[in-house]
Length: 219
Image (tube, rainbow, N blue to C red):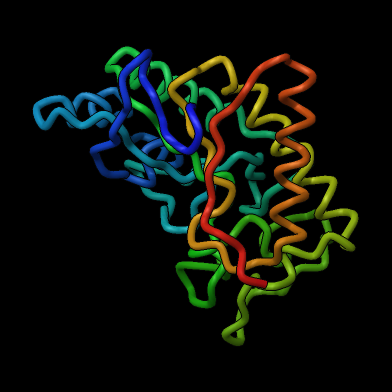
């Protein structure tokens, strides 16, 4: 990074590509084939979610979120899902081999909106986990915002801290990763600053610099 510009060595880097958001979270999906698909187009970046609500369990695919999904169908937000983290590592490794940047969405506000395919099936929805974190339940047209940005919710804050620490420690060695705090962010400046402070603390602990971007907060 020089100023506000991205460089690859001494040359300015221009990102060209698109994102298949579910590449890492869609269990059973071929991540190597997805990474190779971009090659004929000369694309040098892709973009993926780390949390999904869109994948329905089937014979072919399974939803693989960062947290462990129990036999009851609910998530334990205090335990991580090794399948997801292995898929994420495989995807980053393959794209590194392809010489392609990967934008990782730490959070995704789109999946926190109301609707059956959104908040009602989100791991952070209180109906879908065993951790009693006080977020809105499914049904009734509810959505996750603004509750998911509540820094006074200490249970939720602890879960976020553990998740972000796990994400950064699992991916920081890949120099082609760009972290996006939240896709289509509509939260507060305070929440954004808090997440950035966690990233800054991690950078200091590892003597490293990470690439971080986000839409500006308006509240």
